[in-house]
Image (cartoon, rainbow, N blue to C red; front, side, top):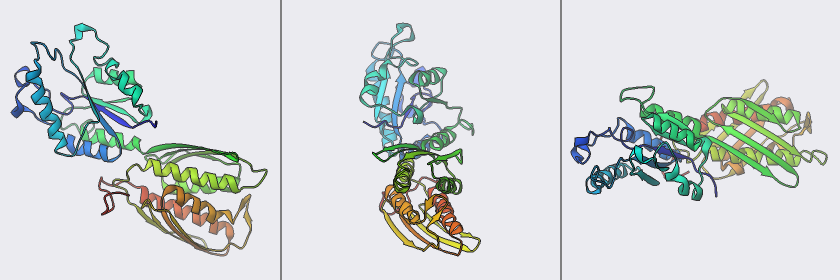
Length: 358
């Protein structure tokens, strides 16, 4: 079972304004926190699941009878659902602090069974709350805690929280192991570095660095392959692993540029047309005067991009012409990198497709 990206959220003070004792069962007094709906919509569209975790002191006792609590709680859930925001699960601790129970935040007993059945990705999951106990709860879960500030706090309000979550969400790690190769790839579309590539083929390393540098994303790619046979398996499997990592990091592709184009390098010219449509298709037009550049066979250049497009789920048209083979190959990799920079860039939350899916 694959680990999920989850945003755990507190209820009172985080999703809705903290009610006073007199407002606990007053539906007309419920007020959403400022800009919480658009922020949560962005988070959900980026592929995160939402889980509510709330302490409700004395729920089910005379202090907070269920007949007072339940209508308000249902109203809050229905209010968010009406805006397209659903919670994957809701967990409520009914105990008082003095009960010293295992399920009250910041303890995590409330989630033990849930997490055992549905594991999360701790590096890409978050807890959002307005209290110290929420941050301690996050630490106890081994995830990042984000504290919500007062309405109007530009640095800690819901829009800022959403930006921080989305900035760290577009990451992926892919491990590909066959009888010929072992490839490890980590990408982070929210960062421009670091870039670290080691495949055992010097010029190929340099080209992969160009894709990441001009694509504007962080890349770690390590490959060990049967170079004693030839370079084919290492180049091909690196392309497949890198394409798969980028595809995973893109999530549902909401808000991306989707398309990308262009590049000239001295006398060489590479024309690139890219569409992250989810449909793999590759068109190549170019001939190289040399069989190799460094240790990289030039016949593997179009093969790399074909494999890359297949794994990424991209339509890629690549045309190159020139006199210097080194420049031509480098123009191809730089051009695809620059096209990726345009296509991967996230600007908004709308899916760039009338189909509703990419």
